[in-house]
Image (cartoon, rainbow, N blue to C red; front, side, top):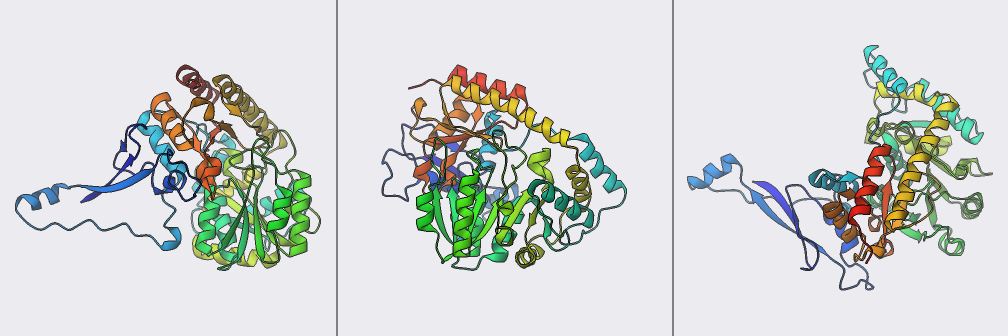
Length: 459
């Protein structure tokens, strides 16, 4: 039997059920739609899954001749991952394809990376650089990362002892958490957060404490942070520029966080993959602040800056005593990262400054198209200082929550956004917000705006 999962809405007045062979709004999405808060409204939609089966040709013949059929096996997953199913990004991209919608949800460009980097990858393959790389990275790429880190932060690091190449920043996050966090360790997150943070911390058995950044400016609530961090805190995880909000942590906020971490002997894990997409203020790396390098792991990647997200090339920079734990975990996660792509990434990181100037200019033009368009449609648009994301308040259009709105937007309007409630420990906090991305060509952005202008109406 081939398993088939059907998701249905429990409120008849909501949109018609979705049903197809792949998981659509899976149990991961239930996190935002189901009640796990007593403050939940009884009018919120929920989803339930029923498993049906589609017989194969062989099984149909067996049924005809009376032979026995095996019952479908129940889906199995470790308890620490029961709440995490297919990621929201995969789900929404699948729906985009199904409904012919313009995908402004998942943050991957619909245009290709620079030719000089692709040509470097092709040349590396032709030159026979196709076997396992050294576990922590080929020497040339480690050196290029160290050079960039010095240019960006003013810090000199040893490429052999303090730089670890990973398969994307997501693996750098996993290696850092699994290599440095013990079961029961307390880790502070800022919500909303990239979904892999919570999942990986759960795999590590960490105790998560969450501090919510709230619109309109998503500022760090300093008093709440001071009351949350303590001698029991092992680490704090920061993403700046911030996905999904586009917030950039200010120098004042980072200085307070640094002071509290030094006072309480807390590590800092910083995800800085959008550091070259800082539009309205300069990016500040936590490691560059006084006294912070020795307690900071700085994570980054190639994909966002060079529009090569499918290459999955990332890295972590940390002092030797923290790099040890990162490398131990990395060794047993992927061991090594694609060899020819590391050679090409070396060329990429040595691009002239003009590349980054043009990159920022291009993205600022795309951002203007989307932000002005969303305002014209009737959304309340919150400021985005970095990344290629923008968060809006969808409530002017009368849908109960972010999931209902995103489903309506896909099926009836033909545009994909991401419901932000999946980025919160308490989904209720994100029910009024959705995220759009502008890492698409200008024609695609304009077409999406026109669809929304034509079909979305305030209520």
